[in-house]
Length: 94
Image (cartoon, rainbow, N blue to C red; front, top):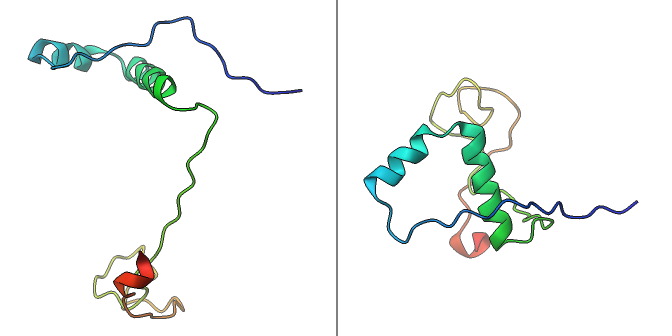
């Protein structure tokens, strides 16, 4: 079995070159699901719908944070066993 892109028969909405206040107000009246559907159509018109962009997060400083966020194990106020590391240099990040 192979997967194929679903082809929609609905025309892709073309945004105006310059938004009028009335046009923006009409968007606010649309149900959220309709807005989501329109956004998906515009996205598919400009990007490969079957391609996924991979991204990663990099913690440039770990542990020893002076904030007391109760949910975060990096806070200096919690003993979560997180190894403290200094701020990474710009060259290491980029």
